Image (cartoon, rainbow, N blue to C red; front, side, top):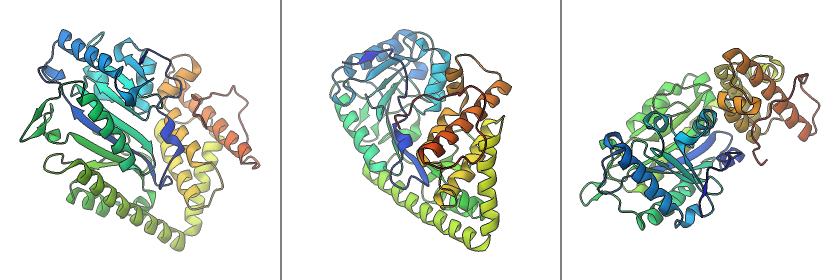
Length: 379
């Protein structure tokens, strides 16, 4: 049975443990857009119709094996900080918050391990999705495919024999599939090869965005690469294409890092250690500054210039160093200045703990302030 309104805890953070190519690829995500027959798309639906879609998905979820023992939340009933936490963990989109129109108008269903779930009443009635660590597109697709089959056996989905699955946006018609990888490519940025690579990505039917997808800026050398087309190809073809192109980008990134090590080793080492030193000592950190510094440290760990922190720790900081997570840990809303101080404290203590766990001498002073812990990661 699905559980209603359970605490968020560490749900949605399993991916931070990493996977294949974890030093370069943070995560892989696959989602498909589906709509129910006989209902207007969410953007044109009335309150009763939206609530009906939520209730139908709620009832179906109790019989979906992939969601057995999972959780269900009506998004508008959540505390505002919890809603933001879901966005920061990529479990819901900013668009879902924007399109919510009161009680029972939108929802989120998650599997027990949070590896897959369903957004209800975003741009489409259902957005089925899976998020896994590292480069693991096929694993993510298998989860979504199974979830799609199970839900399709319970709810009538809008489908056209010629066009495929019908969606609110014409660019999603067909498979309705969007697959993406969150990739860290500082070597290509530092060697000024990034524009060539991004142009090449665009020429083969892919697109790139920032950390939070469409409309978000690129910070910390983290790029989200995804497919553009959904019509005329099978889901397997789209997944395979993105995987092969991502593999080439990884090769280019490794070559760029080799060039940096060969041609400017002292400059690279200085950049890495400065980033680590600032994170270990700063008393105030803005979000964008933290992201950029994490990029330098992540590069240093990958090139063995630093023995710590672990990639898992860097992934956790990337998520839990964001505003809503800091506010949940502090138990209060924070001004920008307060958030910057809490963020710096959290990062210092997290890195110091990672050093202790690895049996290393601290690289710098720890804080005297109260530790601001993020939600447990299970690691």
